[in-house]
Image (cartoon, rainbow, N blue to C red):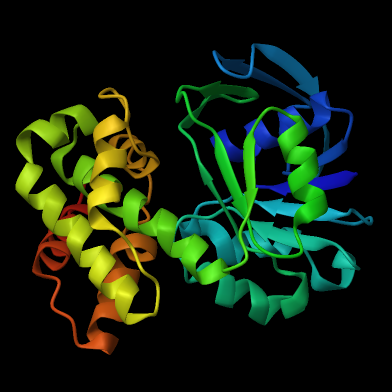
Amino acid sequence: MSFAVLGPGGVGGLLAALLSRGGDRVVVLHDSGPREIHVESKRLGDFTASVQTAPRLAEPVDAVLVTVKATHLEQALDRMPAAALGDALVIPFLNGIEHVELLRSAYPASSVVPATIRIETTKAAPGVVHHTSPFAVVDIGPRGEQVAAHLRATGLDVRIKDDEKAMLWDKMAVLAPMALLTTHERANIGEVRARRREDLEALVREFASVAAAEGVAIDPIANLAFIERAPETMETSMQRDQAAGRQIEIDALGGALLRRAAKAGIEVPVTERIVEDLKKRTSRPA
């Protein structure tokens, strides 16, 4: 297959390198990115793969993997003109749930196939990606079977999910509590579990309650168990973005939950407090 990757950070760089290593054609949509990506991963191996680069999508591909942060999505879409998309699938791996509606307003709705990825990666330097988590799980919604097969062949754990809303909420309800608290506490998940246990449990319950109001059953006990199993040194991308002085995905994760809670008439006081604290923190002058 031929793939374009929009957003060659930790996740996008890893997926581009894995697909290229597997024999697929990969073009990374970037102004001046490296043409080789070096991956270091205990699970997937250490290797270097070659990719093509282009500032904008200008020739047909089978699928575009959208791996930018939610904070940069709208501006990044300039690199992916609708007229150049053709029959390509648009497969977003963004955190949150609201990006799907944005993409379906910019491209044919039937071409947008939501996906999620559970993984810890870091773009250590231009063209260098570290995969540090023992897990690497991809879920893809209906119509993504062919892409799923190619990703599965790279060594990732890949599943097809029939219910895209449940798929997006399943990740949101685990990731967002971890991201909000590791960022708020400026600490890894092990320290959060030790010092912010009450807030962690409350956040997991609040996200599960709002998901239920949207028709998605989330088990807070199972989600807490998953967080308990996470390596204690695990950090979230939002936490690392804050530490580096970059814009954080507070609106895509916390803001989205608050909007949906208000619509459903559900109180989420812990989420509200942490989101407001983080907004105040990011609005202060450096």
